Length: 191
Image (cartoon, rainbow, N blue to C red; front, side, top):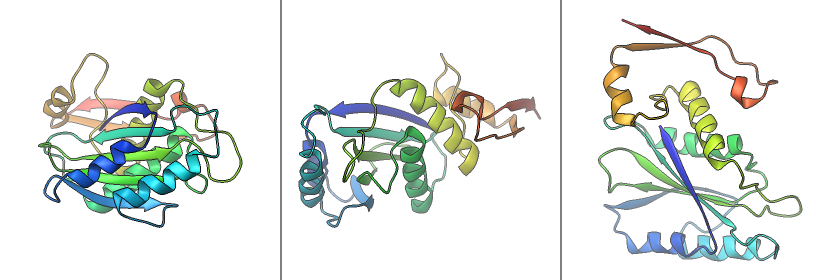
Protein backbone atom coordinates (compact mmCIF):
# COMPACT_ATOMS: atom_id res chain seq x y z
CA UNK A 1 0.00 0.00 0.00
CA UNK A 2 1.11 3.51 -0.74
CA UNK A 3 -0.43 6.93 -0.02
CA UNK A 4 -0.07 10.24 -1.85
CA UNK A 5 -1.49 13.43 -0.40
CA UNK A 6 -2.35 16.88 -1.70
CA UNK A 7 -3.84 19.84 0.14
CA UNK A 8 -6.40 21.88 -1.73
CA UNK A 9 -8.06 25.25 -1.39
CA UNK A 10 -11.66 24.27 -2.05
CA UNK A 11 -13.80 21.17 -2.20
CA UNK A 12 -14.41 21.19 -5.96
CA UNK A 13 -12.48 17.92 -6.39
CA UNK A 14 -15.20 16.09 -4.45
CA UNK A 15 -17.86 17.61 -6.69
CA UNK A 16 -15.86 16.26 -9.64
CA UNK A 17 -16.59 12.77 -8.31
CA UNK A 18 -20.14 13.38 -9.56
CA UNK A 19 -18.86 13.59 -13.14
CA UNK A 20 -17.55 10.02 -13.12
CA UNK A 21 -19.73 7.08 -14.05
CA UNK A 22 -20.41 4.32 -11.53
CA UNK A 23 -18.03 2.13 -13.53
CA UNK A 24 -15.21 4.60 -12.77
CA UNK A 25 -15.92 5.86 -9.23
CA UNK A 26 -18.19 4.81 -6.41
CA UNK A 27 -19.10 6.42 -3.10
CA UNK A 28 -17.98 4.11 -0.29
CA UNK A 29 -18.30 5.80 3.06
CA UNK A 30 -18.50 9.05 4.99
CA UNK A 31 -18.13 10.13 8.61
CA UNK A 32 -19.83 13.19 10.15
CA UNK A 33 -21.57 13.98 6.87
CA UNK A 34 -25.34 13.59 6.49
CA UNK A 35 -25.45 13.65 2.68
CA UNK A 36 -23.85 10.91 0.58
CA UNK A 37 -24.02 12.75 -2.76
CA UNK A 38 -20.87 14.59 -3.86
CA UNK A 39 -22.67 17.95 -4.03
CA UNK A 40 -24.01 17.54 -0.49
CA UNK A 41 -20.63 16.41 0.82
CA UNK A 42 -19.03 19.54 -0.69
CA UNK A 43 -21.62 21.82 0.89
CA UNK A 44 -21.25 20.28 4.35
CA UNK A 45 -17.44 20.27 4.29
CA UNK A 46 -17.28 23.83 2.95
CA UNK A 47 -19.65 24.96 5.71
CA UNK A 48 -17.42 23.48 8.44
CA UNK A 49 -14.28 24.84 6.74
CA UNK A 50 -15.80 28.34 6.78
CA UNK A 51 -15.48 28.34 10.60
CA UNK A 52 -11.74 28.94 10.19
CA UNK A 53 -10.38 31.80 8.15
CA UNK A 54 -6.80 30.81 9.05
CA UNK A 55 -6.79 27.50 7.14
CA UNK A 56 -6.17 28.35 3.49
CA UNK A 57 -6.02 24.70 2.30
CA UNK A 58 -8.81 22.90 4.18
CA UNK A 59 -9.17 19.81 1.96
CA UNK A 60 -6.81 16.92 2.66
CA UNK A 61 -6.97 14.57 -0.35
CA UNK A 62 -5.15 11.25 -0.13
CA UNK A 63 -5.06 8.45 -2.65
CA UNK A 64 -4.55 5.08 -0.95
CA UNK A 65 -3.33 2.54 -3.50
CA UNK A 66 -2.82 -1.15 -2.99
CA UNK A 67 -0.38 -3.37 -4.84
CA UNK A 68 -1.42 -4.71 -8.24
CA UNK A 69 -3.25 -8.00 -7.84
CA UNK A 70 -3.94 -7.51 -4.14
CA UNK A 71 -7.54 -8.44 -3.28
CA UNK A 72 -9.17 -5.85 -1.03
CA UNK A 73 -12.79 -5.97 0.14
CA UNK A 74 -15.01 -2.89 0.48
CA UNK A 75 -14.89 -3.27 4.28
CA UNK A 76 -11.08 -3.36 4.23
CA UNK A 77 -10.97 -0.22 2.07
CA UNK A 78 -13.23 1.61 4.53
CA UNK A 79 -11.29 0.30 7.53
CA UNK A 80 -7.98 1.34 5.93
CA UNK A 81 -9.32 4.84 5.17
CA UNK A 82 -10.59 5.33 8.72
CA UNK A 83 -7.40 3.94 10.24
CA UNK A 84 -5.34 6.20 7.96
CA UNK A 85 -7.19 9.26 9.27
CA UNK A 86 -6.64 8.27 12.88
CA UNK A 87 -2.95 7.56 12.28
CA UNK A 88 -2.26 10.95 10.69
CA UNK A 89 -3.92 12.68 13.63
CA UNK A 90 -7.46 13.33 12.35
CA UNK A 91 -9.79 11.98 15.00
CA UNK A 92 -13.01 10.82 13.34
CA UNK A 93 -15.13 12.22 16.14
CA UNK A 94 -13.89 15.74 15.19
CA UNK A 95 -13.26 15.61 11.43
CA UNK A 96 -15.35 15.00 8.32
CA UNK A 97 -14.36 12.16 6.00
CA UNK A 98 -15.59 11.02 2.58
CA UNK A 99 -14.23 7.96 0.77
CA UNK A 100 -14.66 7.14 -2.93
CA UNK A 101 -13.43 4.03 -4.70
CA UNK A 102 -11.45 4.65 -7.90
CA UNK A 103 -12.07 1.93 -10.48
CA UNK A 104 -10.03 3.51 -13.30
CA UNK A 105 -6.78 1.79 -12.25
CA UNK A 106 -5.75 -1.84 -12.62
CA UNK A 107 -5.05 -1.96 -8.88
CA UNK A 108 -7.35 -1.12 -5.95
CA UNK A 109 -7.35 2.48 -4.79
CA UNK A 110 -9.56 4.85 -2.85
CA UNK A 111 -9.73 8.63 -2.61
CA UNK A 112 -9.86 9.86 0.98
CA UNK A 113 -11.23 13.38 1.39
CA UNK A 114 -10.74 14.85 4.84
CA UNK A 115 -11.69 18.26 6.17
CA UNK A 116 -8.66 19.62 8.05
CA UNK A 117 -10.92 22.01 9.97
CA UNK A 118 -12.48 20.14 12.90
CA UNK A 119 -16.14 20.35 13.77
CA UNK A 120 -16.62 22.52 16.83
CA UNK A 121 -13.49 23.89 18.43
CA UNK A 122 -9.93 22.68 18.25
CA UNK A 123 -6.79 22.91 16.16
CA UNK A 124 -6.82 22.04 12.48
CA UNK A 125 -5.06 18.95 11.21
CA UNK A 126 -1.39 19.81 10.76
CA UNK A 127 -0.02 19.61 7.23
CA UNK A 128 3.70 19.36 7.91
CA UNK A 129 5.69 16.12 7.47
CA UNK A 130 3.04 14.60 5.17
CA UNK A 131 5.51 12.27 3.48
CA UNK A 132 6.79 10.84 6.76
CA UNK A 133 3.27 10.55 8.19
CA UNK A 134 2.04 8.79 5.05
CA UNK A 135 4.89 6.25 5.16
CA UNK A 136 4.36 5.59 8.85
CA UNK A 137 0.56 5.34 8.52
CA UNK A 138 0.63 3.00 5.54
CA UNK A 139 3.24 0.77 7.21
CA UNK A 140 1.01 0.48 10.28
CA UNK A 141 -2.11 -0.16 8.18
CA UNK A 142 -0.32 -2.91 6.25
CA UNK A 143 0.87 -4.52 9.48
CA UNK A 144 -2.55 -4.33 11.16
CA UNK A 145 -4.70 -5.33 8.18
CA UNK A 146 -2.27 -7.70 6.44
CA UNK A 147 -1.66 -5.80 3.19
CA UNK A 148 1.51 -5.86 1.09
CA UNK A 149 3.99 -3.55 2.86
CA UNK A 150 5.29 -0.29 1.49
CA UNK A 151 8.39 -0.69 -0.68
CA UNK A 152 11.71 0.62 0.54
CA UNK A 153 12.88 4.00 -0.71
CA UNK A 154 13.98 3.81 -4.32
CA UNK A 155 11.79 0.79 -5.12
CA UNK A 156 8.40 0.70 -6.72
CA UNK A 157 5.46 -1.20 -5.34
CA UNK A 158 5.72 -3.60 -8.31
CA UNK A 159 9.28 -4.51 -7.24
CA UNK A 160 7.95 -5.20 -3.77
CA UNK A 161 5.18 -7.46 -5.12
CA UNK A 162 7.64 -9.60 -7.04
CA UNK A 163 9.68 -10.16 -3.89
CA UNK A 164 6.80 -10.68 -1.46
CA UNK A 165 5.98 -14.04 -2.97
CA UNK A 166 9.25 -15.28 -1.46
CA UNK A 167 9.44 -12.87 1.48
CA UNK A 168 8.03 -13.58 4.93
CA UNK A 169 7.59 -10.57 7.22
CA UNK A 170 7.36 -11.14 10.96
CA UNK A 171 6.31 -8.28 13.22
CA UNK A 172 8.25 -8.60 16.45
CA UNK A 173 6.62 -6.03 18.69
CA UNK A 174 4.27 -3.11 18.90
CA UNK A 175 4.48 -0.56 21.67
CA UNK A 176 1.97 2.26 21.18
CA UNK A 177 3.58 4.34 23.92
CA UNK A 178 6.66 4.92 21.73
CA UNK A 179 6.87 7.43 18.85
CA UNK A 180 5.56 6.08 15.55
CA UNK A 181 9.02 5.52 14.06
CA UNK A 182 9.62 2.90 16.77
CA UNK A 183 6.28 1.12 16.49
CA UNK A 184 7.25 -1.79 14.28
CA UNK A 185 10.33 -3.94 14.04
CA UNK A 186 10.16 -6.34 11.10
CA UNK A 187 12.32 -9.37 10.53
CA UNK A 188 12.64 -10.45 6.93
CA UNK A 189 13.27 -14.04 5.92
CA UNK A 190 13.11 -15.68 2.52
CA UNK A 191 11.33 -18.99 2.09
